[in-house]
Image 1: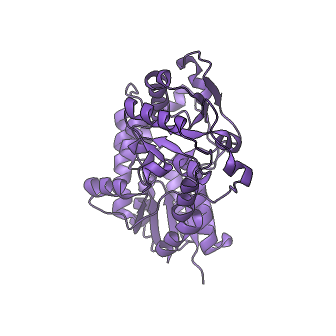
Image 2 (image 1 turned 135 degrees about the horizontal axis):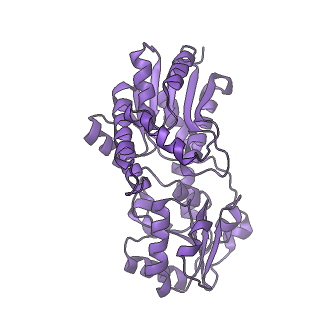
Length: 365
């Protein structure tokens, strides 16, 4: 008889999916493929994500003192406990909900608890929560508590890569039971015409990512420090990126598209990608997505963390103004195609969901 699994996630996506939501859905689909759709149910802490009035924001901070991250309440914990009686495995998607693992174990849950670490969350939330936020310390302390509980009360924990795994060990004295990197269900089949398209002059260069501090700061750095020294047409795409318009110079070589429903035409038309990301945790979902589309990528160490690529074949590793300029000039002067076969093949061999499925089978069985 197959095992029954309850998949606990942060929210059901209510719009254009961000990186973490894409990863959540990919992993849920893989688990359902392994155990069977009827054997896997999902439970969302947030069914619909809504902005709350200021008064409610002040009220909602009090659960954080008890280690209840946004959306968790005593009622929800009791509801999850009641549901858990019907399942062999509780899969907690995000270590910020370590309190669920603690509550279940302390109330006698006999099944298996698996927690998936999207990031080493103290680093992620240190970047995400503004320095002037009066609740910053409370939020960060809650995050640390939950990760500690996730490690103490989960039967198995999953990390994305070795860097996060080492952070977990250093702070919570436990290594992950398995490393399962980001994956995508392959949804792209390049046409022969696309494979033969060459770079334009000047090259069309794409930056895509959500309006998140690490993304926006990297983009603004690139526009200020690198763009004036290279001859490219920069296109900016991503959820909420239209809000950065007032921060960008009025330049004919910048096209701000912002939120779009379909990335495919932008990715296909781009000659190569730039990913000037200097801080963060976990893995960058957009790196995996760009590889799926067979794109050449110029990115930082953070961009490629968790991806054991050959930098010369995929594009270039660049961490300074000078390295970005040198890489872009080299690519611009070389007779390159828009389609990078190495990038696409690396994705298929290492990050397609068919490959990652075997790792989930190992931990579920």
